[in-house]
Length: 615
Image (cartoon, rainbow, N blue to C red):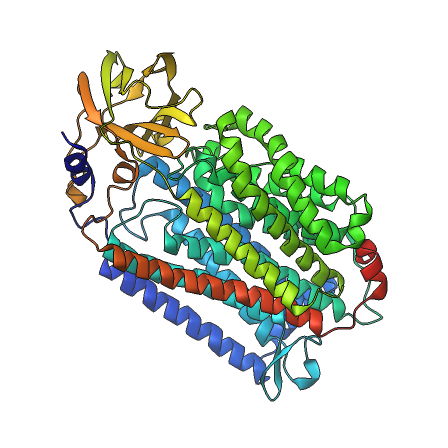
């Protein structure tokens, strides 16, 4: 069987891999329209002084959180919503890894948590915009005039924009699947919209809290430990929000080259921890990392042991936090942008090495020594620049004057370009031509009627991979949550040149999709061992034969069987460009928000000399 024929057999030819059922779309649209209409009606009643209960609830929240009502209530709504979305997101990815695609949009319980969470983020932002009732209730000096007597806080506008961007991912995702089939990967373009909107909305929450802090009166009680915890929680949220791009690596089922993982970890750490240290003061980077560990740990506990789904590990960021805290002891802290850039350098080198100790001890896919040259090439420039952006976020929140417009905008643009360049490099991979694997299976008796087997694997040519590959492993997934939580990973033992053996029996029956995966530098390829038949997408079973010789193909043809093979690449490119434009608009909105807040208030000279004065 040639590589081309095998690839065509693996890709989808049926209908179930497309969008959701029309009835579900209509039902969700009607429900969303009704809820939106009710919320708009409530907002109009509040703004026209026909109801007072919303204002009373906001006033009560303001007294509890020691912030203006237009901050306290929306921030409380935001915290509940973002945690709801995070739980739903981790559970959803886990369900897809264990069970495969959904029977429908409403058949997956995790979707409800995601949808409610994203909608809640949007509503929280809109609530912050609606609560101020008149020109004499202007929410801070940076407020944006909507009408003659309606001013909205910048943080609320940006939060609503991020929430709307994330919500747009839901209908666009259905359209995407109808055109291209289901790209069963976290990094599908419309999936990234939902992830990015929710993740970056955490910065909007920090903007809003800052506007409320600056709007306090002299008789406002001082901040208590509860509010301090909320501020630390916000930076932990930024860290987690920037970390969700790594989830496939956390579960051990990445569909892209491993060199992405260090870059993503360094970028998340530099953005969140530098900003936290500048704003919150000594120990803030470590505290934010510890709170993030606690949140991710609780969610992982609920998803895996409690709901019996696949386990998700996560980075600790403690090494990166330690680097930031040590550098903050130097005079660099008095020059925040330089502090951010140097911290990014430290995070992208020493911080990543410290993180690798945890990755190699706990993760399904540890980092080989061979990964480091290319990993540093990608991670270091990205970490340096995101560290600079994190410093500017910290400067906005402490009232320090940002660098000139050209420098600030230039730094954001360079960061976007660096991430884009690193991503373009990471997306490059090779599928070796005329390479194959001869696999000999030995069945292992089982008591549950399922077929399991050990494998003897010989690669052709024998020198196909180096002495230190990223991985040569067997992956079994989508076997159903009743079967080992639906996922199986076995790193093969090398017994000779191009000769490997399994270390435990692998599933080769039922609903499993089991494949041999080889990743070595830019080589990223796979061989199917057993793939269950899938009539819904027109995919026939690929049987697990006692002895079989099969060519290496691109992993995407196996991991994403639901994708349609007949769609022109030009259409795919157009779809990706539309998502890219939306993403750049969101980033521009976040940059605009920070700049408007910074330009509209008097700058604290003492804060410029000592960044931790506000903490």
